[in-house]
Structure formats: C-alpha cells, structure tokens
Image 1 (tube, rainbow, N blue to C red):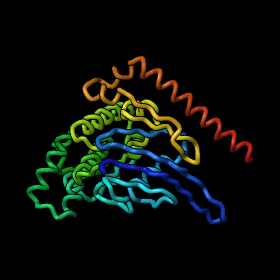
Image 2: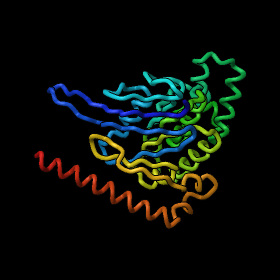
Image 3: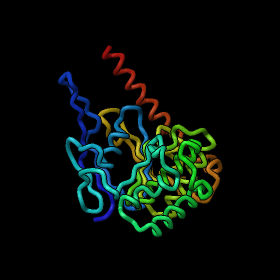
Image 4: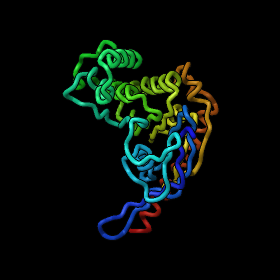
Length: 268
C-alpha cells in the first residue's frame, strides 16, 4: 500500500492542573503519492500538531499514521521537514548543510558531491556553495533548507509555515520554487500556512481545519498549483475562481475566529 494514511487520529495534551486540551479529534485522511496539499485553519486548530505527528515527533493519543504500508512510530528519512526558520547548522557552509544527511548515511564523497551540487543548482544557489549560512538572506536560507531536505530523498516533505517570515517578493519567488520542485521531483508535499492566498497557490488539494478540537472542516480540489508551475503567480491570482475561493475561505476562517473569540468572552 503506497501513500500516506491518517486513520482516526486524535491528540490530547494533559495539563499539570489535571485538565487537558483536545488538539485533534478523529482526523482521517488519505494522501496519494505526489499530491501537493496545503492546510489552513484558525490559530490553535491543530495544524502544526498534525504535521508533527506525521513527522513522528509526537505520538498520537488515538489512531495512527501509515506511510507506504507501515506505521509511523518516530522520525525517519522517509519524511523530511522544512521549518519556518531554516534550522540550519550555522557553523557549516551551505554545501555542508545540504550534504549533512547523505554524510550521515555514509554516502561516498563523489556521489554526495554530485547530489549536493545538483540540488544547489536547482534552488538557485550554485554560486553560494562555500558561503557560511549566516552570510545568506532569509530567503536564501530557506532555499538551503529545501535542498537539505531533498538531499535525503524523502517520500513526503512536510512544511510548517516555511515562507511566513519572508518579505512579499521573496515569498512569491519561493512559492514558485516550491511548485517547480513539486512538479520536477514528484514528491508528496504537505504545507501548513496561515495565508489563504498561499494555500490556494500551493495546494492542488486544500484542507480547512475547524477550531479546536482540530477536525477537517472543508476540502477543496483546486487548479491553481498546476497553473502556477508554468505561469506568473500574479497572473494566476487574477483568475476569477481564485478570487471567489479566496473570499469564500477568508469568510469561513473569519467566522471561526469570531466563534473562538465568543467562547473566550463567555469563559471570562
């Protein structure tokens, strides 16, 4: 069985005062190999918790995650993670960062060099191989993080708000790069974002999660990621359906945030 299955997943965090927080409740989802999926929802709806369970960083209270026919029980090279901040090794060069995974696998030096050089060319950093990480801009550091993730050849790439800290122009360039890598590598990509526009652009499949306890509220199948592979993303945003979906989802999340604020006011 190939692909990623999330089966009746629930996550409850026990608190020191004896109460608990139900972060996720009965989430079931099947993700086919090569799908590009974005996940949206109001703050605190369990988006990052879901991603961390898929990554193997957290064990769910109930349910399970199955990848390619076997159960996920911890971190593994099958799943690569790209964080909001690059989480790079500051004391290493760009080349050393990207080659870290292959080095840990004991890959021969010649093969590793070939892979690293190729990936740095793909992400547009071929001229920066020997630079220190701290010499790079935020956008360039995220390119290094993407290349480092790809160097491990994971089946699934998990992205937790990877572009959230970038300026608007750099963010748009990185969105185009994500689409290019998705199409060229055929990897399964799951991306968490707070930006409705980004979710529309980078999700051929888009999930909107409900407020805590996190559940799948609505799912969309969208054409914009495929359109954006070969088109200017600003042109994609002009598509009539893009504007329609954006307003629909913005209103949906706004209503959820209002519901959350109402709960807080009642509790007070």
